[in-house]
Length: 381
DNA sequence: CATCCAACCCCTGAATGGTC
DNA sequence: GACCATTCAGGGGTTGGATG
Image 1 (spheres, rainbow, N blue to C red):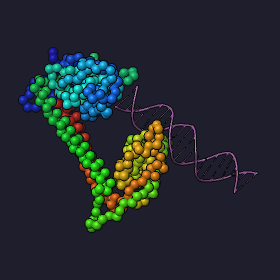
Image 2 (cartoon, helix red, strand yellow; image 1 turned 45 degrees about the horizontal axis):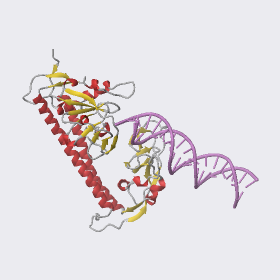
Image 3 (cartoon, rainbow, N blue to C red; image 1 turned 135 degrees about the vertical axis):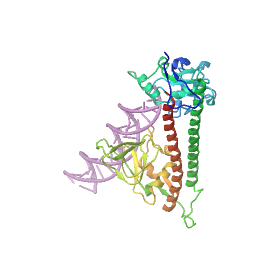
Image 4 (cartoon, protein in one colour; image 1 turned 30 degrees about the horizontal axis):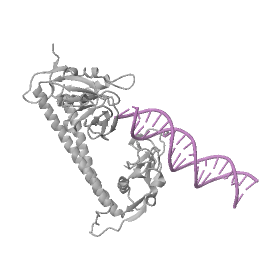
């Protein structure tokens, strides 16, 4: 007897149960890619490896663009309807559906390619974005060492499929949802670019704000950072107990403890490792050994410091040969042009408004992604 | 296997303090 | 006041665990 099921929600005009198939039954090959390392892009052959697939959007997103090394064979070129799977490492199970817009792509050995036949590729691909698939990957990839799933194992993944027209109907609906998400993403990118451009114009004084009564603000003054603020060192926090005071590292929030280093508005900046990602801090907080914070502000408001820090090219000031490093003296010696406090506040308010719109778009995008994930659970069985 | 990053630790130089 | 010992904080390289 055939194993069948019916999904919870469905488009009008379709009826009848969905039938259970193994992934291997609706695909051809299941071949491993090129066993070759990546080299600089040669202008013709684009290489796709696990890291070139975006974790969230599952799009081909190379950084930088590379080509495979050595002899390039046609059989490693992806075609319409090809779906690739990451087979080892922490990203095991990550998938990418070939999109002809990405041009000619040659796939790497850590990916396995399946060509989907007689079914809608996009419909099948969507199954690899479900919670059910994630769970399956988690179990199947368990090994004594690094996680992994081989070609034969991928073929055993089970899914339920309707008729081709119903698959296509679902696929076109879901791709419309994806398009909406992409539209918002592009909007967000544009706004981010706009913010960057405006900040440049503000800090080069091409744009100046006026006082509320229409008069000019005073001229900007050249200052050493050390004249207007002090740099505080982070400290180890391991000896502290649990609490509700956040501990920040160069990568952001780490944990919560029961003591604080500083209270008030401040800006964190990396001392080692990531030195070019300033963060705005407020309230009581603790920073680790590798994250500086600012304090004792004179003639400068912390939120403006945050803006200034975002415009500084920190990597230029790196003085170490190994892990990038900044020292207090380097930071204190930096020269900046400083507007009056009132103009600083205007600039801060203006840029924060743009930032709010960006954050708004971001939460809309997150919301849509969550909604789609839930939708997949209802539409598939 | 490569990358990232917190934690670790060594080195240096300034500050402090003691002794003759 | 000169000299030396000790302490301490900051600078910066190394290490190892986590992650992709």
